Amino acid sequence: MSVFIHQLAKWPSFHWDAERLHLLLTDLRHQQGKLLGKMERLGFALQSEATLQTLTLDVLKSSEIEGESLDAAQVRSSIARKLGIDIAGMVTVDRLVEGVVEMMLDATQNFHQLLTEERLFGWHAAMFPTGRSGMHKIVVGAWRNNLPHDPMQVVSGPMGKETVHYEAPAAELLPDEMNNFLKWFNTATGIDPVLKSAIAHLWFVTIHPFDDGNGRIARAVADMQLARADQTAQRFYSMSAQIRKDRNAYYTILEKTQRGDLDITEWLEWFLQCLARALNESEEILSQVLKKAAFWKEHEKTIFNQRQILLLNKLLDGFDGKFTTTKWAKIAKCSHDTALRDINDLLEKKVLMKTESGGRSSGYVMAR
Image 1: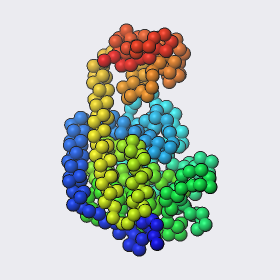
Image 2: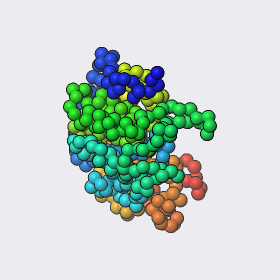
Image 3: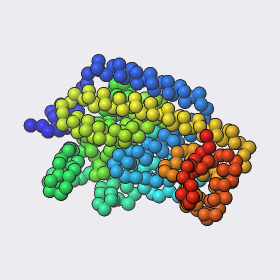
Image 4: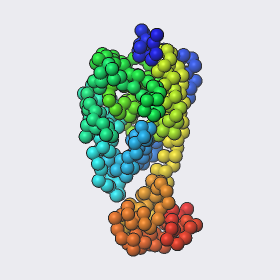
């Protein structure tokens, strides 16, 4: 008796209830069109800022889904540099961040190119530049080669009492499995391009072709197909950020679908609803971008030093936590006295204001 969908005789002949999805898909496509139209009216500079914000969020949140935290400033700097966007406060970026960013940018900026085995191997090698995942050495830039007695499984729980949530196809099947997937992905199928993104995500993560990184690469593949659906390399919404918010439901629906039959209506429905929420959340990104642009227009004649420009951009981008003089000195790599002078000058210019708590623990926010 089959346990997982890849063991079914008709795998991977997915099917779904198109009538059940019709209204949801129609509303979603309308929502996408409105967002893209709104962004087109902003002009190139604001579009670039929105794309930078969205891609930064996408990289950070896709890694967070897997329990890995990347440095936001490094991610933002890496993306800005690769896209040729000039931002204040560029920082040194480590190899891991560079690799994850390279993968995401290749997927979304070069969406029109074929997805190939070599391209996927390049993404995987970029993600694991040391050839290790945590403490474990892994096969990098190639399909996994685990032996039959050591199957690729997704498990949870303490040693000896693990719960097996999923077991992937045997390694010997991977060349044929991935050849079938890539042929389908690169061929016009007549399937709505948004639905194709959802199917690609499920199909790839079900094959689980790598030792590690399958979830992040599956989301990059889905984002690549969404870029094809939008017909633009500019990204104004983050599917990964929304999946991060819905992470438990994401894993639940994946497990349920992979243990079901080949009717994937519920998965497609969940994916479309998640995408609709991501489109709604894009309003927050747009609002932040517009607020930032309005601030710099208002203060185009105000004199700021380079440290202050860095500080203000960090606050305008949404600083996480309480912003204090001590934190500013650390970020700007300057003395506490210099940081205090920077902040006092911004207070006098009525650009910053103190939060309610006083003393050495005083915090600062943008003046309303």
